Length: 79
Image 1 (cartoon, rainbow, N blue to C red):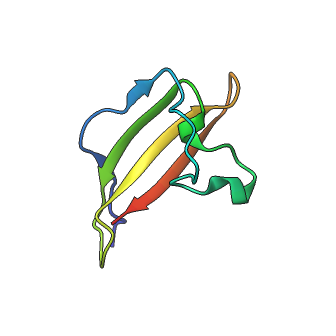
Image 2: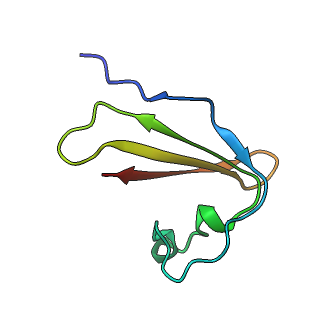
Image 3: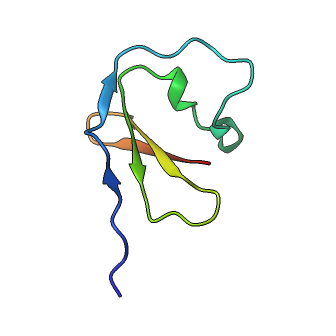
């Protein structure tokens, strides 16, 4: 059985500036010792609908460039 494909509803959009600092991050990537994607500049963002089950409605995707050759992909489930 083929695995389901993640299909973005719209192309990822570039956010040039970081969001204003939040008291409590919405996505606690800091516990993994990673910067929060909302605090980074020049991040491509969007959402995808997956064949979600249960309370998961969609996935938020953020892609942050680390250097010229690599990027970090952040995924967060939203219910």
